[in-house]
Image (cartoon, rainbow, N blue to C red; front, side):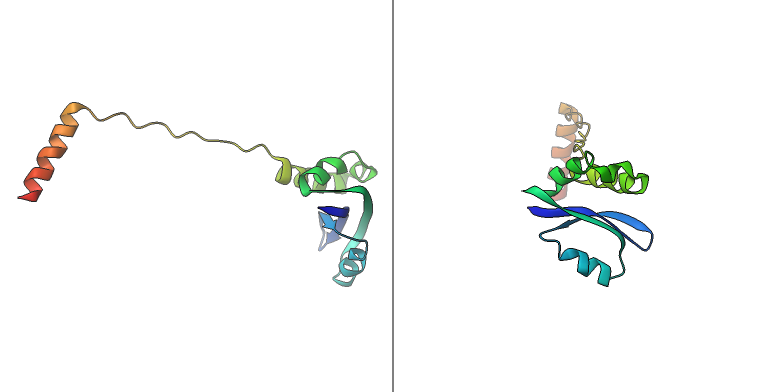
Length: 108
């Protein structure tokens, strides 16, 4: 659960940031981040909730930030796609007999 969130830019790439307190601003700045926009949340949230919440904030009005927020939302709130493998056809009685015959010959 995180109490602070926002965005920052590092080497031209904007990303959503999650933190426990606003001292994170100092760490980001020290490491070369720019356009640091962090704010404190009313209640702690997990990453999926924050990603969805950021779409309702003023940060989302900035196109650069909106792209990063959308990417974060897709990462943390994407619906899992379940792929179902095609079932193999059941072996025929002839296939089973042939396999048994091969195993019997191999055992000799």
